[in-house]
Length: 317
Image 1 (cartoon, one colour):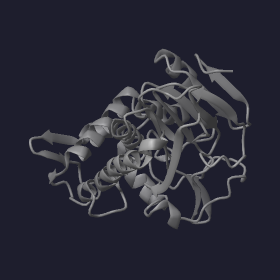
Image 2: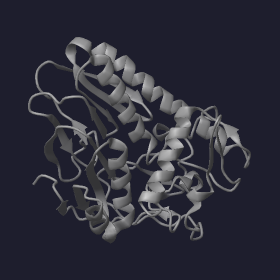
Image 3: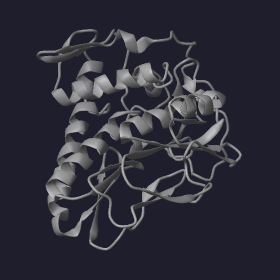
Image 4: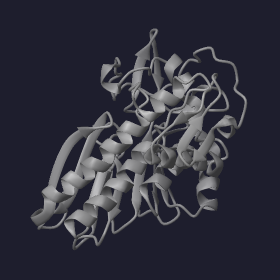
């Protein structure tokens, strides 16, 4: 999912962050102020939630062997959101899948993995051998407020990939809008957040499997005025591990990559974090996703493994 060119008077800045492409649209007269503010927020999330950096808050929590770790306020907020995501989704979005991802070979930055071409047909991933997991492991995460601290069992490894990037988009959009004194859009790898008034005609968005619009599946152009939009997909983040094709969306109930009922789920919500939680949950929930999304009143676009498009709620046709 990617933002395309909006009305005149809006400028664009692009950079690499969080292992993906960061994109900012903001009033041209204050674009540099907006960029600095957005980059500051994204960098703070990276210091808090980067699983591959042993110096990050998350890296120190995972390496603590069950000991209590003092963390930043930003990391505390990110962990609270991850726990909320697990509760909201009934465990479909679970931050305790870090060990599973590590065993699947996702133990380093995305750019260092052996990527699968996006036009490779989707197939169920072979199990990596982990036994069916206990439910509700996110409840083992302990948090303290003063000072901010966290503790997890020594057998648990956290991954905040389903929530931290979207939280960064929301925080970056809010800060950029304040710095620019106008409306902005921030996209982090297709996780889209807006803040402030939209330009004339709204924010045009191209919805696809991949924010780079690789053209491997159905594409739709829509317009949003506010809130957040997120896409989760099995297509772009696949890699080879021990001769097998695997992907990054894990079913916490089995400890294995999700079977491809939906290749892509796009959801609109009040902010990017809530949209991304719902999009990831939809991929995991498979046949139960339409009912779950309807119960939460969330418009969505689900693309089946065979390319059939299903529009739910108020998602535009």
